[in-house]
Image (cartoon, rainbow, N blue to C red; front, top):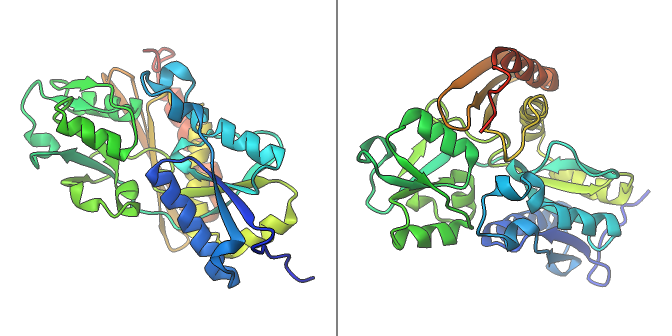
Amino acid sequence: MALDLPTPDRPLLIGTRGSPLALAQAHETHDRLMAAHGLPHEAFEIVVIKTTGDRVQDRPLSEIGGKGLFTKEIEEALVAGAIDIAVHSMKDMPVEQPEGLGLTCYLPREDPRDAFVSLDGRNLADLPQGAVVGTSSLRRRAQLRFRRPDLEVVEFRGNVQTRLRKLREGVAAATFLAMAGLRRLAMEEIAKAPIAPEDMLPAVAQGAIGIEQRLGDERVAALLAPINDTPTSLRLAAERAFLAGLDGSCQTPIAGLAVLDGDRLWLRGEILRPDGSECLSHQVEGLARDGTEMGAEAAAILRSRAAPDFFSA
């Protein structure tokens, strides 16, 4: 049966947040679909949806609900049929999707590393004692306090442009951004010091774009199939299973990264006390096809090693 392709008269509606980075990710999805199916630009329409996480900028995410704050309104539009697919930064995605929705496609993963950004070009090790570092991430905050307990950490929310403006205004001496976001915005030159995963393990699924659809929508599934990146799917299956095994959310300092080597997969996971006073890590290696089981195993091992109050603030 011939594929029912979108047309300018009946375009595929792509839902996204409205930040410059979210729009760049939506346009990447659009461009890959256009190339895969030989379709014109007008066969797709990008629909911007404002989320709670975008509207509330004056409080930490952990106080207002966690990861779902960047996806709830977009997923509601998807369920209602107001959009056909939703494009997400996978590090923002809860481990469970609403009933009837599923993540069926991943684009090739970008650089998963964190970037240390300072206006004077200093790296983390060179910051003087007591220097102020801004971040809204509990993971980065805990990792920073574990490695440099002498530094002061302040809340630093907003998109890439907002955080750079705050640096220029002197709110903090330095901050962290994701290398993937900087590369997608063609701003990688501001990353004075990309941080090796061995020194600072990134967020689970950092650098990956996921595409969500209504389950059972075979037309959309067929449209997405040619652009799905299998290596990214394998890596994220392991990382998100690790996250799920720890009830991961924006209220929990968790890091994890899977690396593929042929048909082998290596996964390192890390959990931290929110105040940075303790860090536990574990790594596993096995066949890539067993990534989900490996992620669950790593989570179970770390849970067994952590005290009952490990994640308490």
